[in-house]
Image 1 (tube, rainbow, N blue to C red):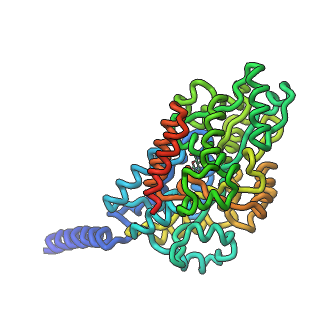
Image 2 (cartoon, helix red, strand yellow):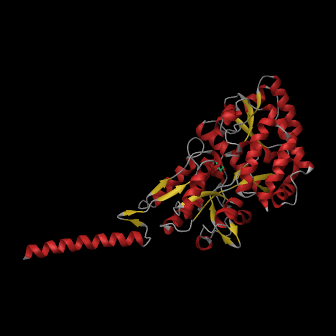
Image 3 (tube, helix red, strand yellow):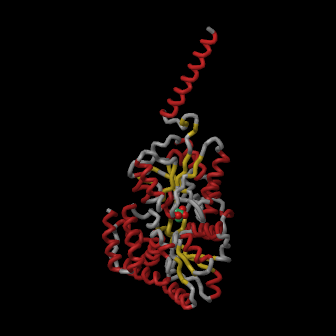
Length: 426
Ligand code: BGC
């Protein structure tokens, strides 16, 4: 009898604990069975020059929250070439990552926020006392209708021209500040057998970056901004002038540009095969952390021609998708990412400057210090190539038009395609 009772007792415990497990997973608790739901961090930061900062941030999180399992769910491909497609299918299938990399500006606001896929984070900002810790312009870039939807981890600058110091010194040329100077320097270098400008447009966004920096140099930030609101047409004389300059610049690039990505193109500059490249300052992270080059010794930097005092802004941000199983854990991660400590662990490795106004400049190299200073007074311009200036449909069409232009170099056709694409802006 006693034996019978204890078997019944055991069965009861078993059935009861199974039922408890099931009810936990179906009630959306952060536990699945006995396992805690993983905090999967979705980005496109993989490999050389990209992942160091993220790994450091994840390590810091693990140190602080050893009980929360965290997974680096990065998908390779510069500027999110592949990641964005994977993300879209996960979001459509109601399987959002715990949090994902998204650019402040149109990519966030006209994309995931407009689609109703993000939770507002005003409470988190209040709790953390963040409202005056990020520049107002940046908070605006991650807000829609008064609600804040993500936390910026960095500020990248897109209008930087990097150059190989030795190549410049050996050839007696100075970093060019204007388009005229650029072409003069480029001619001198070309005549000495050096490739003046490195490009790696295996993924077309790199060429789009070059073009947007030319647009900023020719139009200035006000008119540049008017392109995305429809106030300035793409067949404006200044846009045509920009396209002509772009065409001329393409006459100075490496022949194998279409088989290189941004890292491969940066390598041409680091090893002295090419003299300059135009790239966001993630290239500095790559130069310093992966190629072990020294700022202002091995390579130098200057704003792209005509853009002194302007700042092509790119900001990587992370938010809270609707329907995640572990919102409290996600908020803990966002809390760290938005803290001074988190930002100062991430940004010196990433090449970017901190998004917070009160981060510690002594943690940054000379490039970082200069950029932190520049940011305080520069006029900001949102990057098109990195999804801040305009919705994705338009960016995709521009990338296609640029890809064709790089090989065909037909200015009228290019302007026509831009004009056609601008229908997406309405
Ligand atoms: C991102 C950067 C990244 C770069 C290259 C940009 O869109 O904002 O964080 O380093 O792409 O992948």
